[in-house]
Image (cartoon, rainbow, N blue to C red; front, side):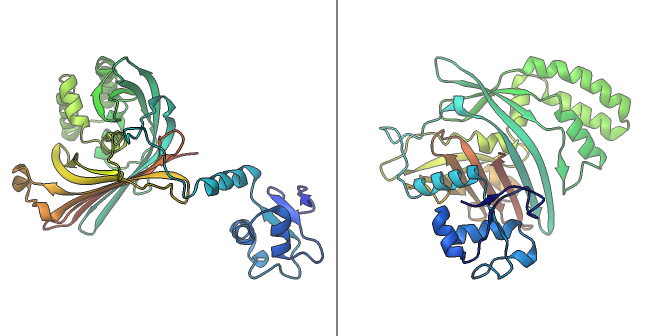
Length: 352
């Protein structure tokens, strides 16, 4: 093959490139390299300069073809080989929860829509498995980046700054997750309470006013004991969606009906009756796809908040690694069609 890695001869020195020879066509190069022509064109056109774009074939003056890194090609081939394969479940059609395989950094994006108002919060969260006991309860450590962006910018209002500063007491947070992948408890409450005493002094030294005092008072109420902190954190969308208990047994047709609890608003729980199903074949990227779709089950409390079953719906899509069964990416939406339309979207994606 004719590769060129010398920057002085190629304007694309930082890339792996192919030196185009007289008589070469896109089809002939694709054949020689063992790569689809469309794949070659697509990758080259992503990174080349505009005059060097490949259309039907090479231009008369084309000198170099930008090639994908070998690692990228190998990954693409693996995905192609997996594409359309039947997923592998346990003998009881159980989706296995391999907790010890879970150790990753995720990009997390929350989008809150109320009428025409849209607010977006973005952050990075680390998830690390620590231990598993004899009853198959798992201990995880959760870390969150101090850098949080709201509508693309660092926190600017006092309430946003207080929220970001106060959150520092929680992390690293150690949580207990059951054998189905469902978050059930907080493990290091005493450690968090101890952190708060130091953090509170920092906040009082830096911020002042009634809002600051009210925020501190609210925070201390959530820290009254382990149960009050757990109840407060149950409104955290990351924990409620990422550790949602999807690792359960399915029927022979890869589906079943279930009930999912999800916070409509802070400390306002809702129960949804969902159809949960797994797509029997791996998707185009070689992932296992798990769907949850359902409608709000009015427990009577919903009336207090002006909700009715026909006007609230929930949907979630999980994409799992086909070898480790860990979450690669997911998307959860909750729509509230009240007098003023509300929609909460949670997007989580594993960072490479």
